[in-house]
Length: 412
Image (tube, helix red, strand yellow):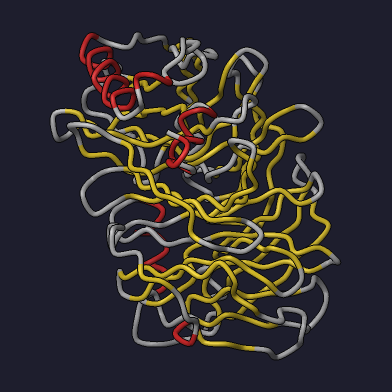
């Protein structure tokens, strides 16, 4: 079902104010005429005042951008699925409110053969569902995976979906490799074990937004090696594995208190990582860990790194390798402790810190996701709290010129 809304007067005012603030930081002598699609800021308001909307991903399409999101619904404790289409200038085109027979949309729009897909689940059976999304925002079910319940994370691996799910009956985390129609080609189980904290309650609180969010993730290392971020042997670990093999290694966390928040493989045994210890975040862009060695287990608490004191304790930072403004960078996105969206930039090759930038004006913002634009700029999604109680999707587009001024201010 399609429901259209329009950016209201408040959003236009906020857009103008922030754009003016951004431009005022630039040297007037160097300001050039800016194309409307090169840089912008938008808030997407609608008339569903009691609903909350949070973006989880953004992808470029032929005539604009497709924003994936989740929304609070009344028929289920889980989030409902939501998609927003905007044009190349970030202006609202249409929204798709996915039926409430599909809930728990996992972050990630994955392109396979020119079509985008995302993963969600049935609210009653908890069975995993695979959905396709057309460029117009039309959504339909393409696959259902029987026996794979409570999915918590997904990523794309050679045109297949690498899924992480929680088996509450067997007390296991399960990783599955599925095509877009729900046919499995790989499956691996990982025991959670027993202890004095309720893992099921923690997982459900994460999925329903009633408790702390946790960085459940999956990823591909190459050479038949994969990893997942989630519970194993009662701790929140980053576990490396091969399907059908006992060859495992891990960066070991501690319960749900200490864990890797984001991991970016850099080649060989080098990783860029952010980890969290009771709300304190640290970053290491040159972590060395031999993930292919069976039985190699290292405690997250042994990793050295730089404190990220500007980040909110509840934020889940995200690291991505990105080519923006003519440079290969590591970009860290997160929610700051002051209610802004924090961006930290690091040189991809050396790992050295380059610059920081903060986005947001007048209201409280939280970070959503990052994507590179076709013109060398950066797209940043987030949510903004209007009037202190209405979470709405927002989108920043930073131009290549803006980023160059941030990354090399000496040229101003």
